[in-house]
Amino acid sequence: MSNTYEAPRRLIKSAEDIEKMRVAGRLAAEVLDMIKPHIVPGVTTLELDTICHDYIVNKQDAIPACLGYGAAPGRPAFQHVICTSVNHVVCHGVPSENKVLKKGDILNIDVTVIKDGFHGDTNMMYLVGGETSILANRLCNVAQEAMYRGMAVVKPGATMGDIGHAIQKYVESERFSVVREYCGHGIGTTFHDEPQVLHYGQPNTGMILEEGMTFTIEPMVNAGVWQTKLLGDKWTVVTKDHKLSAQYEHTLLVTKTGVEVLTARPEEDLSRFNV
Ligand code: MF3
Ligand code: CO
Ligand code: CO
Image (cartoon, rainbow, N blue to C red):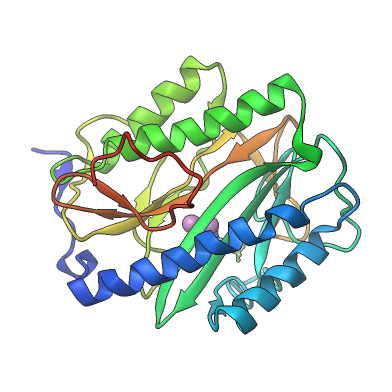
């Protein structure tokens, strides 16, 4: 008996699909670059949301995927374009006119755009005012490196468990923890598709990667315990111990020899990855 399994054929993208995924990915990455100069002490997360909305709709002629997304029994649809997760907020922070950023805050902006029917999904950390505590700075760097360690495993024949294991091993070696309740995901014409991409796990388990699959890797790394708590708005996720959390996310394509980063930003050094 094997604890690995093949991907359903519908998860393998065609050449035409991949070209559209490249465009959507590039647009999502451009939002994260565009918003950077606006992230200064005194700005509210709602102001950042409005800037991203206008850019996506008017300049990119794209659709903000999060707006109106995710209604479920007991949970309203998300009413914004970006998630803004500050300090101890793990993910899905709701932009608000009451959330004024201050120097030393760490902010994650997560954006997903739809272009020509396909999704691009990416997030990154920003240091408000350009600097933060030594701990917060290290946490952000570890979250980014955790994502890269997972990406370094991606190639045909590797498994989802290989990705999760690489991330978990690295994060725990840095004496931080990996959030369990939220994960990466397949992506394409569907925002959150199969497979679930867990950021922890055992090597040689789970779905086997194949050329043409597209999914996100988006580890959430906590300074304290991995457990989280959902706030009363039914969206905002915070750390149970209220210690800091950081996250990075890319949308990825499995290539013949490795990984193509569909949401790469120009300033990012991706030279270690085999495309
Ligand atoms: N972009 C998030 C992800 O990485 C999902 C946000 S859903 C929202 O999968 F509704 F909160 F925006
Ligand atoms: Co995202
Ligand atoms: Co995602």
